[in-house]
Each structure stands twice: as structure tokens, then as C-alpha cells.
Length: 115
Length: 116
Image 1 (cartoon, rainbow over the protein chains, first blue to last red):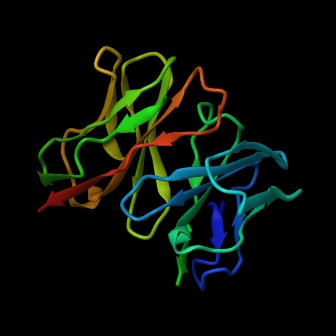
Image 2: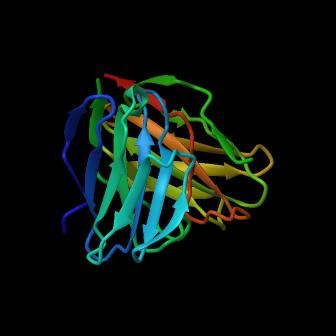
Image 3: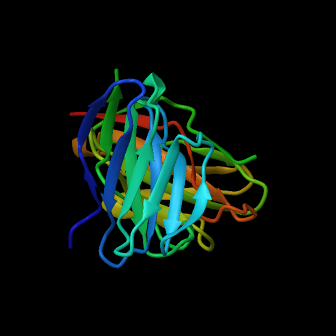
């Protein structure tokens, strides 16, 4: 079975632009989470979606938004990009909504560089 | 507030020697603890988790971790290190009393270097 797939793998944008990142979960997984990982730090939680509904939002500005589609794939959108948005964006899927029930399965991430 | 600390930025171990990567946590309720590994330019891979029960948890690739409630620690261990174990290791926790049953709190990571 395919793992979590993310696209694109790398992206370069300029300040003020908008970006859309995509994620396809493991087949059968209904929960998708998004994390931001700045170089040298651990992942920071952005969003979780389960069965197409937002189940949680981390401490990120409203410039960040996401959605989950009927096939459980997901998109993360970031508007008005800032230099500080440069990071590795990770998508993770899991069977259940609660992290304690099932481990997260991560994609390889999208490396976003904002210039 | 929930938090995770990985006190060592880097751990160096000779191949064949035992390794330990340290993790301490702070939660209000009971902790649900996880270890993940990250190879260069890759996502994180799940190694093991502690939810309840036996304090010694066994996971993937020969790794194990010991939960110590009194010391609020969850150290990752392996009896004999391999060069291929060299990677970035993350500890994460969720608080049983948290309203956010999906959000993991992550440590900053420990770079493990195994020398031949």
C-alpha cells in the first residue's frame, strides 16, 4: 500500500504570495493532520481534520487554512506568505481521530521556501 | 501546560554500544508518549508508544523505551547501536486531560550519531 503522499516536494514563493499544499492519506485513513517543522525544531501542530470536519487548530494565524475532501485527501493553504513561513510542512494520517489510539503516519513533507 | 524536553541536542555512540536518548515531559493528567525517527529530507516514522501497562515498551528496529512516572521520563534505548540508526529522534506527548485528543506536543529533537 502507498504511504502518505504530499505534493509538491519543494516550492519557492515570494512574500505576499499564496500557496496550496496537497496530501493524500493512506488508504482507509480518515484523519489528516498538518504540521509545520522549522529547521532545528520539532513539528508544530497546525490543523487536524477527521471525516471532512476540522477537529483542531493550532496556534497559527488565519492566513493558514485547510480542508479535507470526500476522498479524505487534504489541502493546506497559506495566504500572504511571510519569510517566517519557510519550513517543512508535514502531513500525517491516522485511522482514528485521537492520536492516542493510533500512531501518525507522515508523508515526506513539502519544503516551502519564501524569498 | 504540556511540554516535552529532550535535553541533548546530539548523542554520539560507537557502533555496537548501547544507546539512550532522553526525554522528559510535563502533563496535567496521564501521559500518552511516543517516539518518532526522522531521516534526512523525510517525514517522521513511528517507533513506539506508551499508553498504559508495562513500563518497558518495545518498538520497531530493536528500539525500546522505559516509562518512569516518578521521574516523568520516557527514555529511548537500544542494546546495540547500528550506523543506520543515525537520524533525528523526536519524543512527543499527549495529555489525557487535554481537550485536544489529536494534538501531540513535540520535543525539539535529538540528533543521534553512530560512529563505526
